[in-house]
Length: 251
View 1 (tube, rainbow, N blue to C red):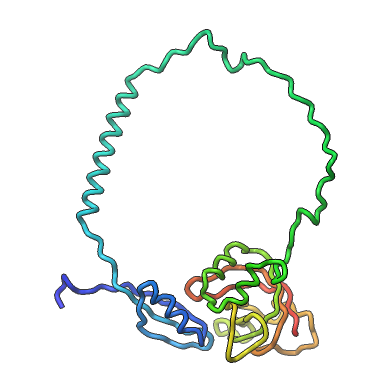
View 2: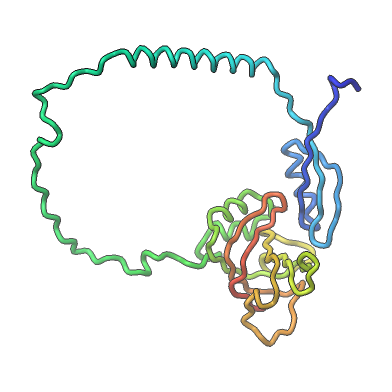
């Protein structure tokens, strides 16, 4: 193949939750990417993608550059002409702004309506499926890479959410035996089906989870939980929705 016709590619690596690789690949293929390889890990699969680089013609850029130069010259000429003209004289008979008569302001009437109570202005502090339709929708979303998930994470960053959940996967964080990355799914644990975002508690230990039940000596994959957590961020490449645990209880 000659150099003139050689295709050059741009490459990208993304991560997907194990078992959901097909959805992730399909999503990027719609944008023109093609699969190169998959490297499975304990929780995530690393997916390598590529697509041909776009070629931009030189002539249009040359034309745009010429137009920019012409526009600059015209701007300088107009500026020179305007600079040579004298500014219009002010009318001596026109009253100055400082001489304008002032009218006494009307005395405001006292409001007879009571001010809103704190509960009326504070709004709902904790987001649940009962008081937020957007949250209810993403917990039923079949694609954890859906724009609905990323939009929700961006809109409600720093807010507190509360929902029934389960531990779908658990891995040591960067090799530490007492620090974990927990994959949190919506609803009851299932090995065959899952809906909603791929929530994650990253780099946590038992004390970080703030368990309300101190009688439990261990926790792990398959445990059904009730979670109260703070929205951190959504990672575009991995489609992970990061949460900061506030309170965790077993169901």
